Length: 195
Image 1 (cartoon, rainbow, N blue to C red):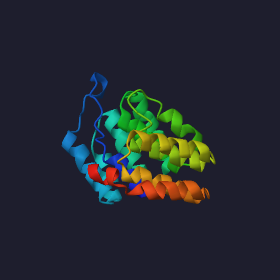
Image 2: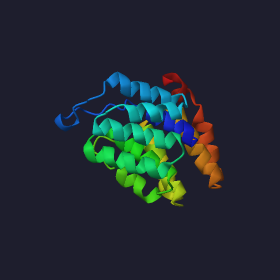
Image 3: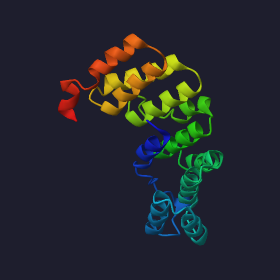
């Protein structure tokens, strides 16, 4: 899965943090959605302007700035903004996923797994498993990448995207027998039944 596809998967999660008293929103949630839509549509200058013109709660502002930085291709800035957001809402899993994605894009592979270390983030779920596998592979820890994907496939045997990533990893690593085996299992009838 490419980084764009992975980002789309992560951003498909609702980036709505629980409200706290310190984060009482000043700008309306609708204004935050407008900024999100501008980012999603690639209208980054307009998103930057809308973000500058509004007074957002600190958590919302940090999250939107992180998304904007990722969209602009500045993962280092995105990491800073998402770290700020996670500090404000440490128990909000989607923020941790976005932080992990920014760390991955910044090449800070060793920091991805700790960012995902949260009780509500199961390493066998597709989003977490794909992030972990990409981080391990980027950090040249191929056995860990393979293990992350195998555990995810074991937990979700009907998830075709996970199976495809496992086949691709095996092929990249020259694991011919594993590539053949996982390829044969890729579109078996039990996987197709639940899709």
